[in-house]
Image (cartoon, rainbow, N blue to C red):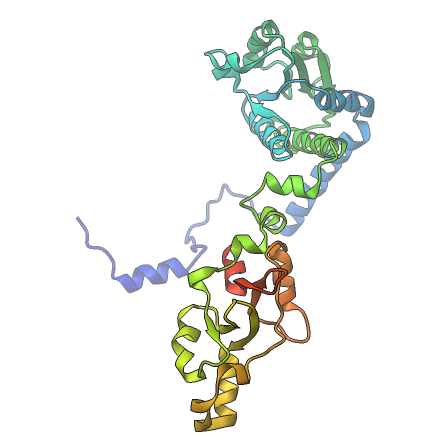
Length: 352
């Protein structure tokens, strides 16, 4: 067994990417920008053929059928069409529409039990002659589902056995052999996602409703999270009284990770704030005199504050507002009582 090369040789070889081949494969043709541009233009022409020849009345009937479906909208397909069908179904789900992907193979082995009368089953197939889908049709019909074929070949078998057919005009595949499904799947995706947005508009889905379906994403968080959801509170707050000496509060100032002190009275009303920046400025201006100064003497008595019911994204905007940005906002209620603090670091950490 040979020994491993030195570590520096390995790291050097990793930096040399792409690797230089001493003997280029003579069977490979070069790819240049002109070749890619020609391909993109050809694909654009194929897609334009689809847009120019799509039957909008047929598409409208399909869209209205999905909009008025009393049950669940199922999508199915095989191979690449199956991937498209699954993606379109997931798009509908993200819009709050009941939808699911039904594998034609698994459906024939028990999963068809999920179908009920009132459901719609959309079958994607370029040729309309996909054997697995044709076997699924009579079983789905027996369950009472409404069947829709979405195909690209005229006068196909699947279109003839379904309740509705939508024809997606296909000039040809971009593949030089007109075989690899790269244009047909593109138009399927464009068709399905466009219909999904039409359904979104018809259902009057609001931005807030959309956000509730995406709670982990930035869009959802910006529309769902309130200040009270992301603020620090109670024992996490760096609080002190206005009569406390500045030097006695250094631990409180630095240990809570907020970069400030929140100055309060006996009833927890907010009096002001004192930041680590204020500490540096006071030390520079007062020198040893800082040992006799109280927090109340040097604090900012008109800090920016925010309500706990405000949106967290609005807190970030308030922090960044002129004349100068701040790193935190005390959170107070209508009685000016301190109930928390929201920091820029906390907002960023929460994904906003």
